[in-house]
Image (cartoon, rainbow, N blue to C red; front, top):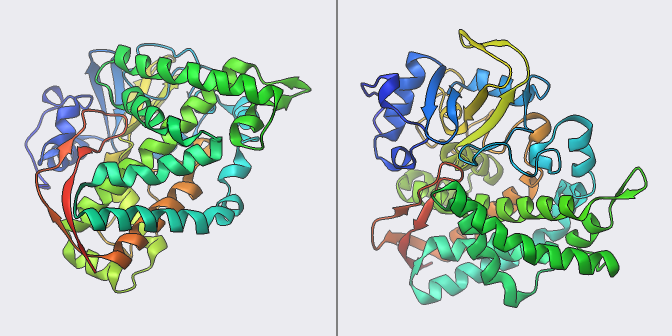
Length: 396
């Protein structure tokens, strides 16, 4: 991507998915950020939004939950205040957020993930082995198998239902209109509801059972709250890893020196963080101002929407040396790809374990990745990635 472009604020619609699929998107966003770290963006669905492009101001917004609330929505394009406001981890702050986070934390903690590491490694190895045997594959579909199986195992979702889960996750996160995305959630919610009702009566030791039987101050968490949080966990857990993995592999294919460095023994933990930063597939996070505040030379009023554009923040040259280069040994690496502060992604340790298992399996089994067609970008500003990535895998 070019580092420079001639743009004006009025000509750039950051909420246009087509922008992010352009080969010069990096240069356009960099030029906009160089003009100013905060811009007023007029959006078709959400009205005027303050777009934060710089790292330091973005981090400030995301760590100040008192001044910038999650309850008004965490994503653009959802069509107003969401029904799950105050009922979901992603749409709550303060004590309520901690209450909802507590019962699921053990499943995603580093200790919990270490217990599952071997099975995740074996799963990734099997998935890549099958792909190598087939030769030509759509890598997006192949890599999606890992987070899908892991998430369904955590929730106790049977194998026969897993195709349904991934299809409705796609619709819920990647459909092009709010109505279509809501339709995706509406397909997943009844399925989860039936599971929650069953687990509340007969717990089975899985994540659904834990949330279904969780009590706050002696009272069971309302079934609606359980279902909404499970919906968020399932969709986020499957989509984030799926798109980060595919975009990461594409980045490595286009940086063969870095692929060789990884194959030569580069630190996998550092490399995973750098690939998360470089791809930053979760393009933005939305907050609502709760009080008047100065932000990048602008006066933000209570009720104003503020979108932190994570990809832009993670490519800010004020914080990252050579931000548009893939540097697998980058350290320190304070990227925002998994959030920061109270809303730091609860599934971060699991996501990193899955990504490392995928990279390891590819390095162990694949000598060369060759594109057999152009990648097809999805049309989403929520989780940006590929719908299709056709490749040929040559066995090591």
